[in-house]
Structure formats: C-alpha cells, structure tokens
Length: 61
Image 1 (cartoon, one colour):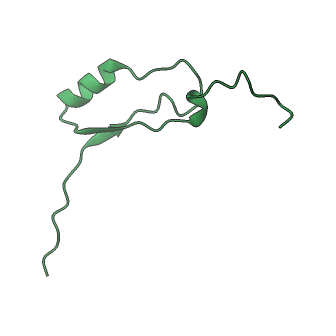
Image 2: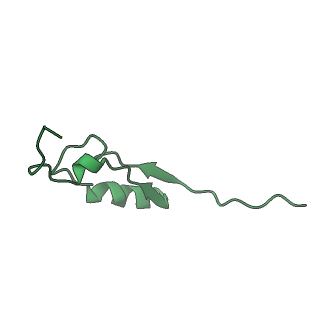
C-alpha cells in the first residue's frame, strides 16, 4: 500500500473578526500580499458576535 499524497497548503489566518467587535472588515491588502507570497488559502475565523445585531436583545433572558 502506498502513502497517499497530501497537497501542501500554504495559508494564513486573518483574525480581524475573532474579538466580536462589530464594524471591522478584512483588509483587501492582506489578501494581495498573501497572493504575492504564493499563499493559496486564507482562514477567516469569525466570532458570531461580530455578525449579529443585539439591539433587540434584553438582559432578562
């Protein structure tokens, strides 16, 4: 049995949205320099709280 060939990925984590602050965005320049350096993926970890609007939520849940 031969060992399967696993592709070698080269990427980067962009963590702008992991802290839950609303209104932040990923910077286009980050993707540009990643491509220039030959990286072929970006992982975008994101906090749920960065995506929702909690204005209608009350504290008495």
